[in-house]
Length: 224
Image (cartoon, rainbow, N blue to C red; front, side, top):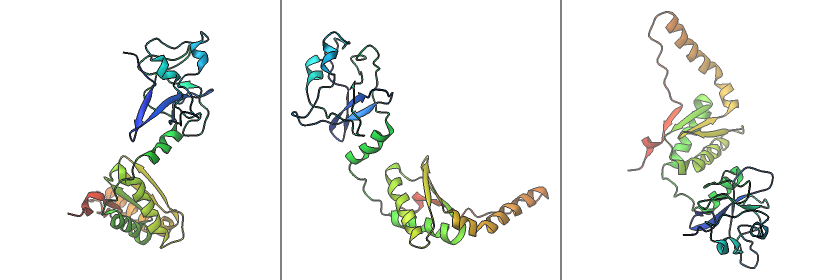
């Protein structure tokens, strides 16, 4: 059976995997109205100037259904090869986009995740730790679909209380929150606790227990 254009489904809408001139990233191109669309492969590829494998449905590749620009705004050159093989002498085969901008933009095509009931509470707990005790906090085991919204909620909660810069980033399900100004305020306390622990080890004594109050576990605050 002949293969059609190299596409992936994004929220039930087909998007064409495309390459641009002078770049190696794989981009995404959305469908356009028939009157404004272009084919997945330019006409000259079919005229002997380049090569389209016979494993493809050539009529489907000519169908003018694609936007003239990628979703990240670049004019694209040709469809990236898929199950039917590479398109063109120097073409490649790929099955997923690699353009970072396209990957960011496709989030708009997915429905927003349902807000979790614990988001506001966890954000406030993190803000209290940052502003009142440490200058930093960690939120563990946060589901991927809740991370962006929770990071925004934490930043908002902190900025309502202090007029300082706040940074958040997520790694492996953990959200890290940092406010340098508040960390500097509590720096002596943090340093003293660390020094006490080192001093105990050097003396051969059990290290002083340091309460890890900067760690908040997402699952602890679930609503039954």
